[in-house]
Length: 285
Image 1 (cartoon, rainbow, N blue to C red):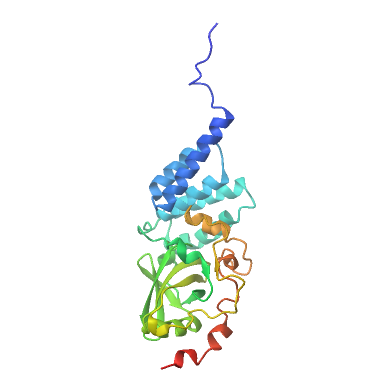
Image 2 (cartoon, helix red, strand yellow):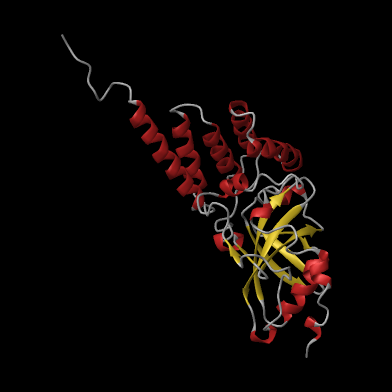
């Protein structure tokens, strides 16, 4: 009587679960480091162990960053088939449909270092705000811009221009730009990151990272007093992967591309009234 070699028998459920978790953690770590080719390969290995909607989403995200738009859309479609309630897959399928028409099935890979620091996505009263971009770049240029990407802000006359992934993606809406341009001229510095992209809009988060002494007492983003001056992002997990930013911010129904920005910045943080109620503050000598 012979006994099967334990090394060749099927993995136990416990070992299989452990292996899946290890591969998932590895894939997330690779995505966090923008190692997209490696992340794609790891997610493929994970899918060899069985179908999984989240692994399909991660693989799709990695392929998107590598410029493989058609392949990315196919994997999002698979994720949606596995989980019909998967809103990340559903929204990205729609967005990729538009981008493929405009930019083709393949485009250039995302640039290294394109992700914004996690600190940008932490609400701090008076130091963080949000804005829509106007005068957007064409869809081909926006094809590789995604939630979580860093945005560089530059002043051009009375406009605040936004760049991401090496291309000009739009202009910060005037109601926000007017105040920030004055503060920037006096020495303040700001960082920004993309929070959402829809078919016709791009929304960004802005954060004051340096206040010049001449601007002491001037608030970058006026708002009513909050119960807390510092609120971390809901799960504190932005470092896992930019895709998780999308997932954790998915619940905002009023913005087709935004993902629950209320949890990062409340809707009234940078209202029109907030920018209009303090005319004297900027006129100080």
